[in-house]
Amino acid sequence: MNEFQIVRDIERPAEEVFAALVNFDRIPDWNPSVIEVRWTKGAPIQAGSTMVYVGKFLGRVFESDSEVTEFVPGTKYSSKSLSGPFYLEVENTLETVAGGTRITSNFRGESRGFFKIAEPVIVRLSKNLFETSTDNFKALLESRVL
Image 1: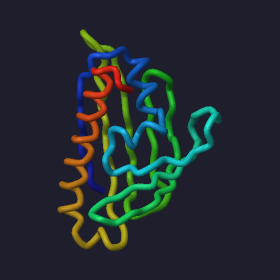
Image 2: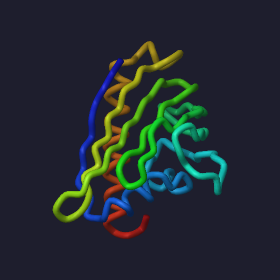
Image 3: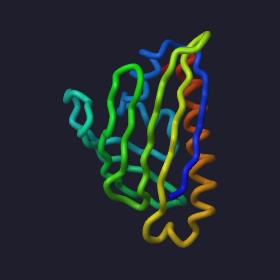
Image 4: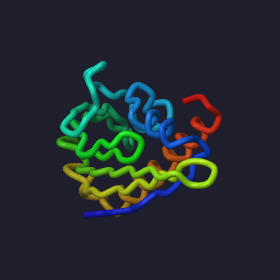
C-alpha cells in the first residue's frame, strides 16, 4: 500500500472549505483528473453515500465507484474507491488555524490492472496531481470563486 500526505492552510473558514470539498459538481473545477462526479443530487451526504468519479489519467478515461466512509460536517470527509484502476482511500481532516483552515489529506492506495505495471511512477504522478489539485482548490477558495 502506498501512502502520502498533503497539508495546506487555506485563508477561509472551515465551514466554507468543507462545503467546497463536498460540492461534487465543482470538483472538476479544481481537480484536473476529474471529468465529472455522478451522485444523487439532493440526497444527504453521509457515511455510506456513493458516487461515480469519471476521470482521466495518462490518457485513459476511467470510472470509479466510491463510497463515503466518514462524514463529520466542517471537520472530516473520507472516502474509498470500490472499483476502477486504482484502490484509493482519501481522508480529509479540517482544523481551524490562525487566519483560516488547515486541510490535511491522507492518501492510501495501490494501482490495479494496466497501471500496476508502473506503480512507482504512478504514485509519483498521482502525488503531483493531488498536490496540484489541492493548490487549485486553495487558490479558488481564497479568491472566492468556489
